[in-house]
Image 1 (cartoon, rainbow, N blue to C red):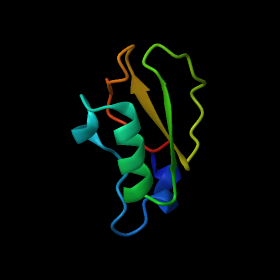
Image 2 (image 1 turned 90 degrees about the vertical axis):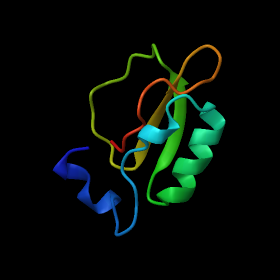
Image 3 (image 1 turned 30 degrees about the vertical axis):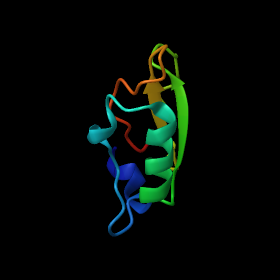
Length: 76
């Protein structure tokens, strides 16, 4: 996350979730939505092509074909 998204990381709010790699995508989404109420987690394929645009209220949860998180979800 860049300095652009500082307001998304309110006091006590997380901005990355490395501990979710290897967990189910739906479970990761629920955890992210609960731990940082200023963002919305969206599950996408690990191979999805996305624009390199920083959106401070979004967290991509990249999953493989089995629905397992393959990369650290990060705000932006």
